[in-house]
Length: 277
Ligand SMILES: Nc1ncnc2c1ncn2[C@@H]1O[C@H](COP(=O)(O)OP(=O)(O)OP(=O)(O)O)[C@@H](O)[C@H]1O
Image (cartoon, rainbow, N blue to C red):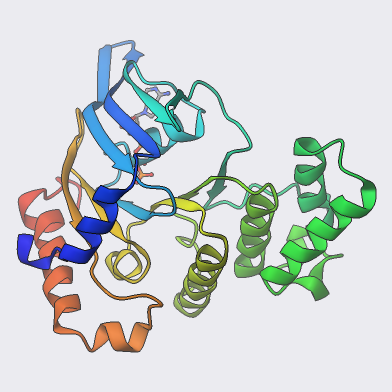
């Protein structure tokens, strides 16, 4: 697969200092039947501003890995560091967007975002906080829906609010746990384009779990492919060579896209086939 790796991308990465470092991380959960090793000696370095997707079969430990970056979980062995500082708890420098939106149903879209901004920046003036909320609602095209509660919004709109809420905090790392998994194909493609635009404008570092190979090939700089659990590891990391800004039609005309797609399919369904699938 070396032929699929672009020299340019590799050189660009090697010039920068590591930003987020997952160093020899293992995660073990004690269970009534004994210790359950979810992840075993995982190493990953992410550069600032990189877009990294993580793929692997259900239950291999993708969320567990990203939970240790968000700080909701801590490694049993090894460490996760951001700017050289060990991550031990959640913080506003790392925001998570889940598949299930996690919005408060009794608050409007505006209020959901305002609450997050207010909790992280209690000392900012009312006017500043309102401006941040308005800016981020506009960024995801939801200015008109500001007064609606999540129950009055479509799945795609709810996920836009979740993304706006996460970005309104100005995180350094945006963690996306299958954010578009529950959306229909068209909404999903629209949101992928929006996400790339937002990422391009803000250049935060993105870690995203996906089960969708085409999504990973469209969005990511690198794709981390996990082995199966228990004791999952990073099996392989692919550099995605398509130039940016990315255009879906152009990518899909590129023979490299199909070569990579088949390679990932072979990895998931032959080399690391899952018993349940
Ligand atoms: N608190 C816990 N105690 C014991 N086992 C756990 C705990 N949390 C997760 N696990 C187990 O760890 C394994 C990995 O879970 P995780 O949610 O990280 O996988 P995943 O790859 O994100 O799965 P999916 O793609 O289905 O979301 C699973 O077998 C899960 O049952």
